[in-house]
Image 1 (cartoon, rainbow, N blue to C red):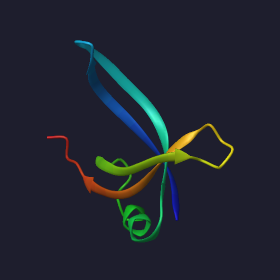
Image 2 (image 1 turned 180 degrees about the horizontal axis):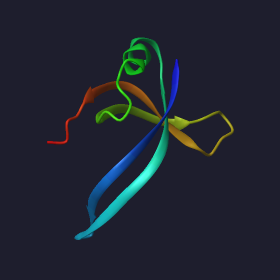
Image 3 (image 1 turned 180 degrees about the vertical axis):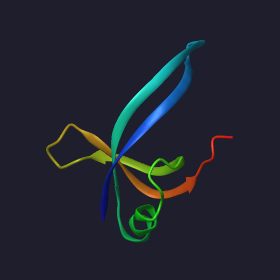
Length: 75
């Protein structure tokens, strides 16, 4: 199991206006995906897939549970 912190920086279009985004979020990965993510170089671009779930049963905070990922060059 790997508990990780990620940072996103970019933009999105909302209601016809470009919005700049810059935030951090928590991620958890288990099994083979966790082992593979442990080998990825810090600062690498990634596309993450998975599901959102609370950090615990009573928590209102969520984190992304990564089930698969791909590297992203940004080019």
